[in-house]
Image (cartoon, rainbow, N blue to C red; front, side):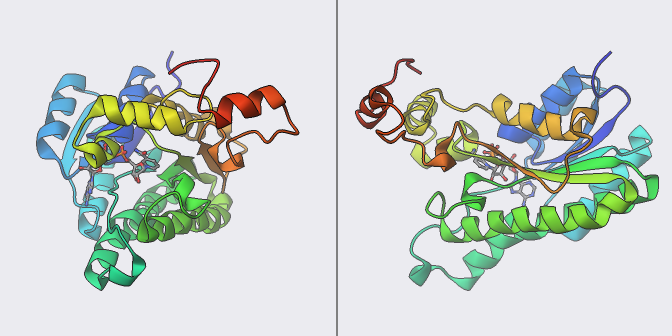
Length: 274
Ligand SMILES: NC(=O)c1ccc[n+]([C@@H]2O[C@H](COP(=O)([O-])OP(=O)(O)OC[C@H]3O[C@@H](n4cnc5c(N)ncnc54)[C@H](O)[C@@H]3O)[C@@H](O)[C@H]2O)c1
């Protein structure tokens, strides 16, 4: 028996990185998934590999009709909907706020913020009528602190944390839970693209920033998403689960905790190597 036997999910951005790992994990535990992504080649290959448990629909999350179609496909083809993962994302506008154009701002917000609102709107329509289900959206450590991502990304991800709380307060009355996860740097195509797709370099870089000294992988984030989708989290709603190896605690242990930890961490050394 899998944790998600006979349950149906939509995962936006499910063709790559964290979304792909989430899709694979849901299927491994009995779930069926509609992958809604812009990348048709990767999405179709994943659906072929995991058939009949996965369907792909080419989706641009900036278009409301596309998100509505993805949700409706789940119901039409799999007969129901139990959860939505609002995951599609980009780094978006980078650089000084003084140089950021309104066009770059609008595009970034459309993908990282408006699409999450639309995912909640259309999944919420089905789930609230049904009286059960769970929604998980991708925030980021940049959604709970400053200086951990570009400006517009930071704004959008803080918005995801806020909407998660307000949507949870509305949907609780219908038995629907709404949560978010906030990962720190994770090894995916999105972060690899920041270093010319050098996966080894991004893995080393992320491990170097991680207080535990171990690079965060998409499966680590998928584990958190699956927990929040599952009945194990039946009392949890409106919550943002930070998955960051302690980065947002301040990361490096000050000397008054342990002189040994301070020496190791501040020297960039760790007892456990990545
Ligand atoms: N990787 C990290 O370090 C990290 C950290 C914190 C949060 N996140 C968040 O996790 C989510 C997934 O990121 P990832 O690292 O797995 O990236 P990724 O690039 O591997 O995957 C993102 C997916 O989203 C899809 N996508 C992008 N724009 C789209 C659009 N308009 N319509 C439909 N699909 C679209 C892409 O095609 C891709 O398949 C994002 O929301 C990201 O902000 C990632």
